[in-house]
Image (cartoon, rainbow over all chains, first blue to last red):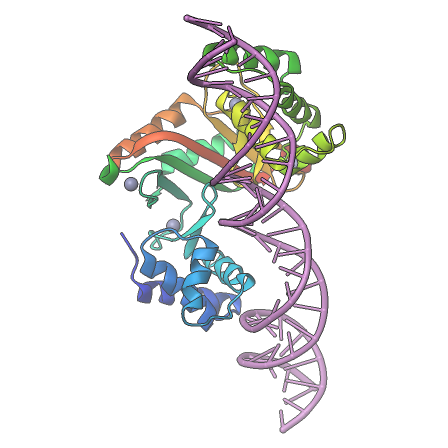
Length: 146
Length: 146
DNA sequence: TTAGGTAGTGTAATAACATAACGGTTTATG
DNA sequence: CATAAACCGTTATGTTATTACACTACCTAA
Ligand SMILES: [Zn+2]
Ligand SMILES: [Zn+2]
Ligand SMILES: [Zn+2]
Ligand SMILES: [Zn+2]
């Protein structure tokens, strides 16, 4: 369920080559922290983790790294909890659909079916809306917590 | 597209009768401010509006009123912008689907089709997830802004 | 090789969003 | 009236996110 760091780094490097950017230590560290946690983390959770090795880190460093990782499609944000999560489906382009457990706080990312995607596009079109991206977040109780 | 205040108040009163609660001045005022604005508002936008008539109002007052209005299904929260919006589809129970314009900031609420609802339920079920509620927020550019 | 542009960083300050906790008041009901 | 539940005001604080500015690192092309 969790992408290995090496694979994520590889994707990051490909993104960098195509966009004149670099996978700097800050960015790599934030990615590694998120991968290690196996849980969604808030920016300030990440900040605390960073500080254990580099005590002077400040919020903008984290938010900048998160912005990079989101642009590179390696990390998704969870709008309804203000957290961030490593992508579980790097292998193909996708919009995430997230299952957020209200008990344990874990979040499972599942692929948005083409059927659903088509429906969303259609409903946007019906309303003359030019769709750029979407957030689909389901809240409930995961299998483990029932 | 916008519910008249009188109708919203009527719904609020019905909710109150069924739940041993009251549509107090604070609650009514917050609702009226949201209706008047014809736009999504942040809690602090509402706070500012309240202060023009009642300068000592503090954040908890607003958040409490918003909680009440959300419980009564008169107001939806927009997770991706930290704003609040009067419901446009009181006539039947529903989960909202929101079209958020990145240009003008307006948000259109459209009914989530039964088809979509069924798909979401099914995908939750497939993953052993007990679905409680969901947030579906589409970001893009509205008809007016194109 | 060096000048200039773009990407990236550190830091301080502050903005923006949200809740906890407490004590008091109002309202409905028996 | 006594009681319980809903409601409110207030202080303080917690949490999330951004602005602004000065600076450094890296690449590329004259
Ligand atoms: Zn993903
Ligand atoms: Zn769980
Ligand atoms: Zn609605
Ligand atoms: Zn617009």
